[in-house]
Structures are given as C-alpha cells and as structure tokens.
Amino acid sequence: MQTKNRTHGVLIADVVESRSHSHLRSSLNEKLRIASIAQLDDKLVRVPYAVTAGDEFQTIARRLDSIPKLILDLRRRLQPLQLRIGIGIGSIQGPIRPPVNRIAGQAFEFARAAINQIKGNKEISDADLFRSYSSELDEIANLVYGLHDTLLRQISAKQWETIAIYLIKNRGGLHSQSLVR
Image (cartoon, rainbow, N blue to C red; front, side):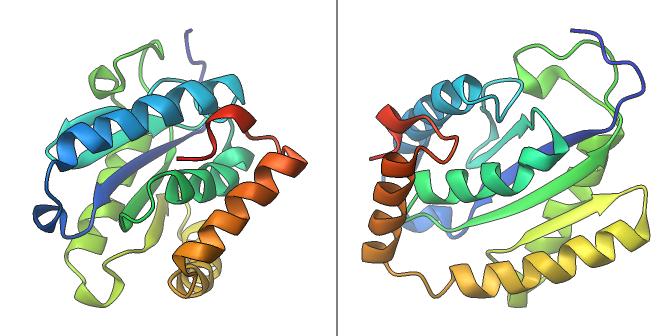
C-alpha cells in the first residue's frame, strides 16, 4: 500500500524492567503474534508487530482514532508486563508492508523521540507519550494520557481479567477468540 501524504500513528513499545523476566523474548514473541492476528483482524493495526531490539517492538495503527483502543488492548494482552509506549504521529515514507522495522518516516522518528523521553524519565517509566508535528496536540494528548496512565497503574490482575471478559462479551470491536491469555 502506498501512502499519499497521510498522517499515521506509529507505536514503539518497550517492556519495563525486562531483565527481571525470564524467557521474556519467547513469551513476548508469542503474545505479539497473537495480538497481531487479532488486531489485524479487528483493523486496529496495518502491519504485524515486530520485535526490533531486545524487548522493544513496534507497529502502525490502522487509523489515528484507533490508537486508544490499540493501547488498551496491547496493555491488556501483555499483562503482567509493564510497558512504556511512544506514539508518533506524522508521515511515513514509501509502502506500508511487513516487516514494520523496514519502514521509515516522521511518525517513526516522533515515536522514537517519545520512547526515549520516557526511558530518560524515571518518574514515568510505564507511560504513554505522544510526539507529533503539533506541540498543542502533544500537550493535550499527553495530559489526557498522563491521567490515563495513572488510572491504569491502579488496576489489579483480577480487574484486568474482568476487563478482558467484558470486552469478549461485548465484543468492543476486539477479536474475541484471542482476548484471553
């Protein structure tokens, strides 16, 4: 698929304290394989997730307005792992096709800047951070997601299970057969 000066959303995610999880790479690969299948089916992402460096992975959102649902689904699927997620909003160069780590553009640069900012700030180790061409958009999105992140940190494992069941029963636009771990 060729892109024509469209604005895209790129997510680069990283597992917090990944060295403390044994066999993380194989577990992460399997969880991301399942997430890719479901999220492609639900039209949340444009390409499957690709693990790019150790415990870091990335994808491209199908649409900008699917990013909130995509982040929630990703965080739920990867429980109990804590994630830091950099979201870049901007252009992408060339065709969008797998593997995602061979695609470049402004959206990837913004996502990389966001994830690096999170990694450099110990106070927001498991946060979502937006970067785009608009400082006003960044300010608003980061304010909203700062609150969102604070609320998510308080969700227990049992509550995550309840969220998964709710999404399965109500379909919530998410692929129901692969919601449960």
